[in-house]
Amino acid sequence: MRIFFIPQAILAIERDDDRAFMSGLYKNLYAAMYKTAYQYLHHDDEINDVINDACVTLIGKISVLRRLEPYQQRAYVAAAVRNTALNLIRKRRAQAEYTAGTADGYGDRWASEEDVEACIVYAEQVEVMKQALRQLSDRDREVLTLKYLEGMKDAEISRKLGIGAGSVRPALMRARKRAYAVMNREDAV
Image 1: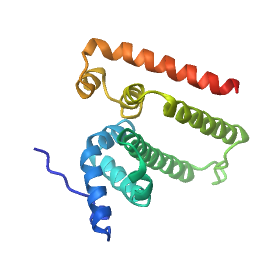
Image 2 (image 1 turned 45 degrees about the horizontal axis):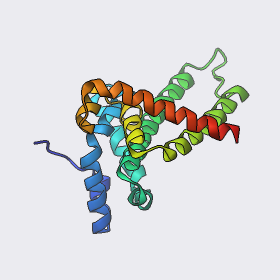
Image 3 (image 1 turned 90 degrees about the horizontal axis):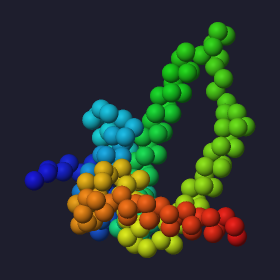
């Protein structure tokens, strides 16, 4: 039996029902949160810091989280952890660049137009993918979420969905194919 240490930020929530909701969400999704953070950071202290920081962000989104289906909650929480981890990495990179600087002591810390445009294009692509996921069946959505948002291996997906190990890859292929078809249909509109 795993002993969970609920982050202080969750324990400090004033409303009992909100505290209970976030504690339950944390307990249910801790493994997925850890796995997501581990994809970017490999030290337990950093991973736990990222998870705690993501929880602080998520506390402000309790009303949103309550309205989501369980698979959507998993995706939302995984995205919060991923973004928190990436922000930590960016912050470190910026600090390293700042301390290294250039010969005159001032590094080039401004984003280029290409960087900004790439971010805008990426955000648009993410929105198209979100719209496509909403149109997929629950099964397709779940298999894609488990594989690509939670980073589960095929064997884990097999156990989670209660399907044979040999059925995971074909299920992923079908789900991806349907998602691409939905996205292409939307692009044509």
